[in-house]
Amino acid sequence: MKNTRRSLLPLLLTGLLAPCVAAPSVATARTGAPPAASRPAADDIRARIAAVPGMRVVKENPAPDGYRSFALAYRQPVDHRHPGKGGFEQRLSLLHRSTGRPMVLYTNGYDLTYQDPAFRAEPTRIVAGNQLSVEQRYFGTSRPRPTDWSKLDIRQAASDHHRLIRALKPVYRAAWISTGGSKGGMATVYHRRFYPHDVAGSVAYSAPHNTDDRDDTAEDRFLRRVGSPACRKALTAVQRAMLGARRAEMAGRLGRWAADQGYTFRTIGSADRVLELTALQLPMVFWMQKEAADDCGGIPRPSADGDALYAWFAGVTRLPAYTDRHLAPVTASYYQLGTQLGFVSLAAPHLAGMLRYPGIQEMRTYVPRSIPLRFQPDAMPDIDRWVRRHGSELLFVYGEMDPARAEPFRTGKGSRDAHVYLAPHTSHLASIDKLAPRDRARATAALRRWAAVDIPTAS
Image 1 (cartoon, helix red, strand yellow):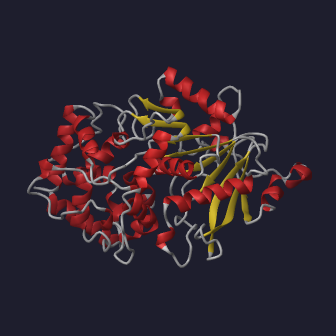
Image 2 (cartoon, helix red, strand yellow; image 1 turned 30 degrees about the vertical axis):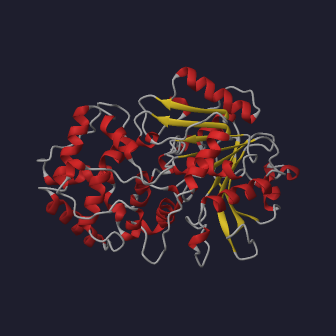
Image 3 (cartoon, helix red, strand yellow; image 1 turned 180 degrees about the vertical axis):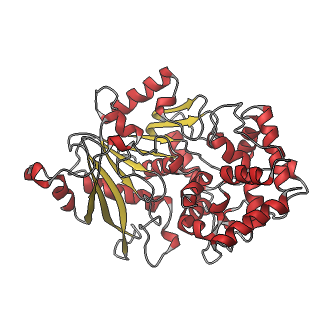
């Protein structure tokens, strides 16, 4: 299960399920950087980047044709309000094409461990630009030691982005565009709220917007309507089997697997608690991955063979990802969800009498008790007001089948050059390319306008 940590992220509405995050094919990447002798010294971008105060060039990576790829580290303060009180190095990945091309600031909302250094986001390809991928604070190697969790909030993260842009704009003087998907799309909007003039425009893909964490009825309504009645009925039958007649069998399988691997469930509590949590979330994660209303994805019958039923359920819900070993690296995400972003607690009247653990869907379930969680209910309404009253140069792209669009970002009377598009027959992997032709043309034109480019679509 070496990919278990990566596969956990769909449950968090992750940027790794964001549009266009698949790595380019091997054929598009060079086997190595060109020899130093072939690069004119006067135009050595590596030297120029290394000269930026606080920036460190870690290494040069293989890159797509026409690019150079660098692993970077940039010194950031733990607290931007008090920059003298400690710092950390934020991990970055730079795809350099030309200082005369636009720069795309890309965030997946998490760490860069699983992102191919040669990956180009959709806006980067459309504008044939450079790309700076940013690891979010408190993820991956970008974590202060000791860890003061109170400094992990949306404004501090936005200030990381702001400071990076200020540092690199003397090198990359053309237009800057920001983008991200899912949680990364959310971070893109938060950055714009606090620093609206840092970039010329922003594209947020599949970004949920939970303005009232006490009210999840929008998600409940969406899940009652999405897909075909046959698929919804089949999912309900699996939920009831998992928490009814097959519960002991399935929890036992999960527990034995964890014991064989040396994994534990101390944070969530037990294999049975994990089974209940994932059974509750099954419809949401199922539809995040499906792109056809009648695609039941081989949903097994409740009476299916135990191996087949367990394998399907574990594959959809990523059961092993709830072990302590795989939860620990993404604690920061659950902390953010539990303090500012909010998350979904799905209603389940069809499971009445089967649930054993009240409140199991709350973020406290995922975060060790040693880390304090206090939810800030004003954070998301503030973002909502800004988007509706002042948001400008914004593109929001959602998939028709994606539960993330149950509570989307919406524009308002004060929004300027801000647009929300829906990609038909698409899940959490929405993209501009999947929009209807007219919407695709409009979104692409807006992006090129912001980037101040007039070029054919890049490959």
